[in-house]
Amino acid sequence: MSVEARAVLDQLQGVKQGIVEAREAKAITPEQEHDLMMRANAIHRSATGDGAYQGLLSQIEDLDQRLQDDSGGGFYIGDGADGGYYPNG
Figure 1 (cartoon, rainbow, N blue to C red):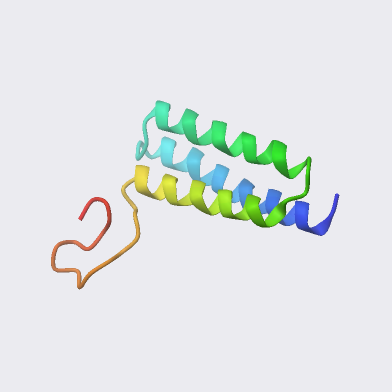
Figure 2 (tube, helix red, strand yellow):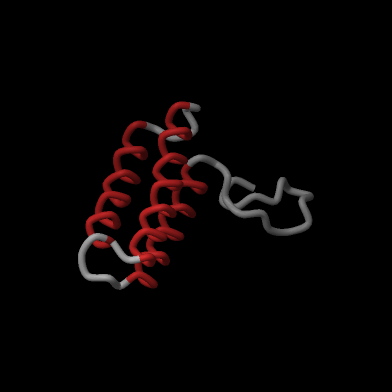
């Protein structure tokens, strides 16, 4: 396995662990967990196939952002006066 493929799979494993932990903490629903894991598994299949690693890293970043949004940990914006978190702020 190439270094690039291993890096993609290592990054993906971290996101998958985050999905499991979010579900265990009841921060996401079982349906959200299922959807996120399906997307993660599709990325995994691609990583072991064609080698378009830059695109896969982008997909992993999108998946990670989706997990954060679903679990209420979206990115911080603004001055904090309204809580500042998108989409919950």
